[in-house]
Length: 156
Image (cartoon, rainbow, N blue to C red; front, side, top):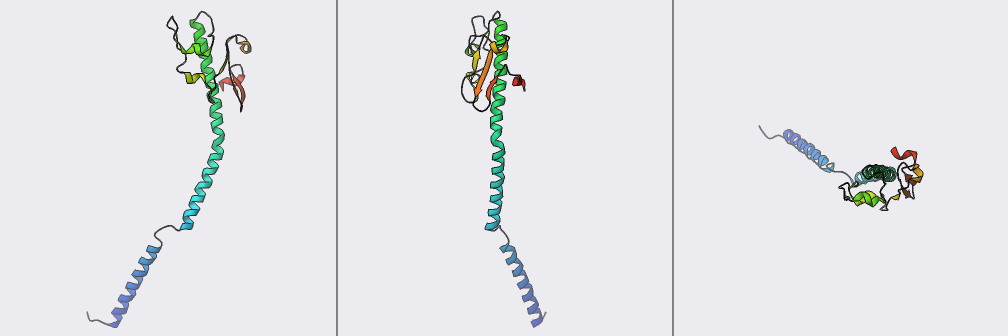
């Protein structure tokens, strides 16, 4: 094919178009700083909203743990009474040991005798608030007040 100015200009135009397309593709290959900052700002805002809503859930979890612990301690005390001729344990620590008759322990570990804030549960073997049916077991919390086995909401 002979070399003509028309084929040169056509070839030059094709080269220009190809180079321009490559340059456009190369320029738009990544994200701009503004786009990245917008994405980070959105993530931070969503995380802040999530933390705000999740903050109260830890308190509710502690409250639920106290109720479950008190229910378990009450059941362990009832099991103790059944195996010890109708006598309630003198303290919650008595539920932790195996006695001479081979009964116990009724509680697996020392942590079960502490509330979520690290304080021991209160215990009264006379059961005055339960009309003597079970010993009184309760927790005094600053957030929720008294949580006990004589209130109606223990099973909830």
